[in-house]
Length: 260
Image 1 (cartoon, rainbow, N blue to C red):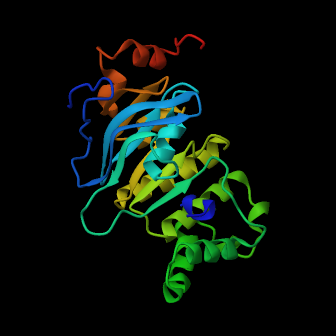
Image 2 (image 1 turned 30 degrees about the vertical axis):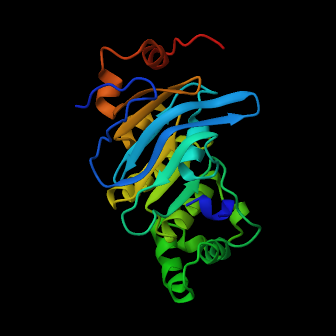
């Protein structure tokens, strides 16, 4: 799939061998079984076993270079595991996914044409494309800007357009890579509000973020990574308030991780 479409109390879990239990006990959508990723001589992700459930709002946190983006891309199927397995759940059709990047990829076309092209690439039937386009624009508040060149939009408006593209393909899972990292506070609030609405409508979320306040607001489940290892997988409230986190996670929350 093109980048254009990719843009729409539980016990503490240590290490990679345990099988995490999702904060929302819904239907399993996809699984990693001892899946690792290596880029040449670099072990980017050590064996991870993880199940993503329908309704999860999963946040991936950790220091720079901890493996968040690699795990996000592995879950989304953009990269294949070097060892282990990634599998989709066998309940009817495979889950549909979309991905939102820090900086959305937009063509030098109008807002409307960017949406039309994204829906076409995603295989949305022609009649449905016509019906979905105004709904998607309305959902993100861009109706009045439909004929404006997409690249002339502000950063927050561009991210809202990317969310409209994602919403329009009706994904089961929305992957988000630092979705508000480059936005001002007002635009962050707008984008967070849309993400929250999508989740309330039943969309499963997987996001990487350095913004711990955002994680508290949006996530129901947190995975902490350190040097390519899955260290903790907990519901959000216990993650931020647990008094027995592993040292790597505790130091991360306190901002005391040493330089590497």
